[in-house]
Length: 273
Image (cartoon, rainbow, N blue to C red):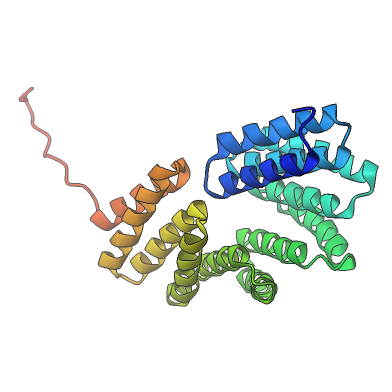
């Protein structure tokens, strides 16, 4: 693709990002890799940074943390060499997500603090919201639920102001999950309902599957077995269609918990079958 116009390559990167959001990780990664190679051939470092950091996010989303870290560091180096602030923000955000996924909250927050300062200084609202959401993830993972909700709600306000339905759905799912983890599942229902509705409307199947699992968890915690079972089954169907293995087994686990403990046959003695 050495002779393909930059606009066409950027359009292909948009396709890769859509595929990442719908759970088609292998396709998304392959597209981003092709664009990165084309950018090198065309000596376009900004396009290369965009492609490499897109691939890093895909690798993070698919739990390929080793390669995600390599891609993130490569993208950050290009962003710093070119002094491109938006890509620096994306690189530090991605680094924070990778560290968070690996339970390194100190490194995660250090990366996200850098991203937030850069985003606020440059008045990049979308990146401010994204970074706030990521900071909320770190706070939630360390049981600082009230601070997590502050971050998620701040991100939600920006997403609504910017009419960013994808961001609203993502923020609302995070808010719902936080309420579940802090022991207030009833407060999770409304945000999760909006997350499920918006994710379906914009075709974000991965977020919808995750929100449905969370809804199942909330309904199960409220002893609403019927609605919980329906949510888990819908999540299972969505996860299998994508496919999204983690959400598939989480759905199955939720259904198993609703079914209760399995009964075992009494042991027979004397070698009886």
